[in-house]
Structures are given as structure tokens and as C-alpha cells.
Length: 284
Image 1 (tube, rainbow, N blue to C red):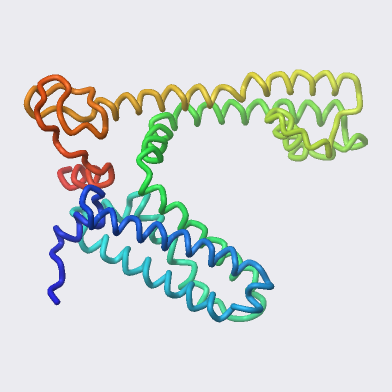
Image 2 (spheres, rainbow, N blue to C red; image 1 turned 180 degrees about the vertical axis):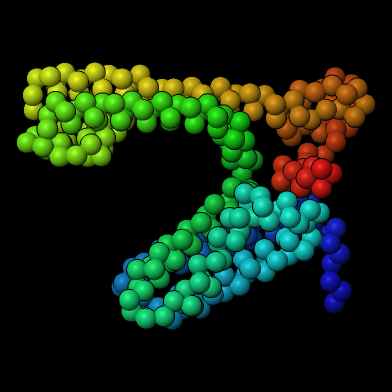
């Protein structure tokens, strides 16, 4: 049996437009979901007691399968280094690393680390992002608005520090505000409108400050939503305008359009976002 060429493997693994590519993606999605089910069952003592051996075999089967998938992706990628450093490349490594690392952690004193490595296998579910174009739009929107969101969180950190320190001075240890970090924790809980109620101000002045903090929380919580919504709208319009007619060169076509709505010419096939990014990285 002849091994497929790198171009064929690239089309099947990174592309989604061919029947083979769609079948590969579907099989991989099923494997990811089943591996998550195995992880959930492995966290249940009753399941481990009855089918622990089967779960162990299944876990290593999925680990070897995802390792093979990662190796083939690196092999056929046009720009291997770009793929390895990409978001999906890192997620692919995180999906298999915990199982291998758990082999090198012997002894009962490391049971907590083994449990952590088991839970880290949940990163496999992030591999599903690759198969949702809407998720790619959301990730690009987050990336474009990262500076605005960072400024927002920096401002929020300053506010909770100020309110927390102020409540520490006003209330004091006798009312539960025993330290500035604990008071900042109260400010975070209050300004995010969670309100656990484990620490509450008792003095009238402290309650007044808490009321202002709560009102500010309702006003502030809408800021990142507005930033992300605006960037998401731009990204969706950008994706809408991405496809152009090779004959009249006009944009604004639907994602699934086969023919130009202006001149009736045949549209270029829609390219997978990950494949387009890999090709762009190779040109750079």
C-alpha cells in the first residue's frame, strides 16, 4: 500500500472541502468526544472499580491516536514551525502530554499530580474549536480586542484595590476584613455582582461604600461585552466580505454561495481558515 503524498494528507487533514476531509474531521470529533467520556468515567470511583482496566486501555488508545494525528499534521504542514507554535498546535500537544507524563510520576505521594494530569486531558475538548468556523471568528475577535480588554481589566484591578483597601480601613478586622487581600477579594465578589455574603460590611459608612461598589459593578460589567460585541461584528462583516468573484472581483457573497450574485460566474471554493492561515504563514 502506497503512503499518500504530503499534499494529499494536507488536503485531508487541514481541509474540510473534500469528502475525505469531512470524514476525517467527523471521525476525529467522535474520538475527541469519546475520550472526554473516558475522562469523566475515570474520575468516578465506581466506574474505575468495575471497568478500570478498560478505561486504561481506551485512554492509551486515544492518546496514541491523537499522537499519530499530531505527527501527521507536523509532517504534512506547509510551515511546520508555524503550526507547532499555533493555538491548535499547542492544544494538540496538551491533549496527549498528560498521559505520557503520568508514566514518570511514581509513588503514592504524587497522587495529586496524577489526578491533575488526568484532568488536564480535558484540553482535548479544545481541539473541537478547529471544526467550528464560528469559534474561529470568536477567537479572532478576542485577539483583535485583547488590548482594549487588557486596559479594562487593568482599570478594574485598580478599582477593586481601592475599594478593598478602603473597606479594610473603614471596617477593620473586627468586622471580618482582616487583611487588604481579603478586602480586595470582597471587592471583586461585590463588583462582579456575585455576592457570596461570606464577608459583609457592618458600619453605615462601609455599607454605603458597598452600595457604590455594587452600582459600579452593574455599569462596569457591560464594558467588555460592548468591546467584544463590536469586534465580533467587524469580524463577521470581514468574513462576509472575504469571498470575491474571480470574474468581476466583487465581494459580499454568502459563505456557501456557488455562483456570483452580480455576474453569475462560478465562485472560488471556500477555503478552510486554518489552511489559509498555514498558507499565509508559509508565504511569510
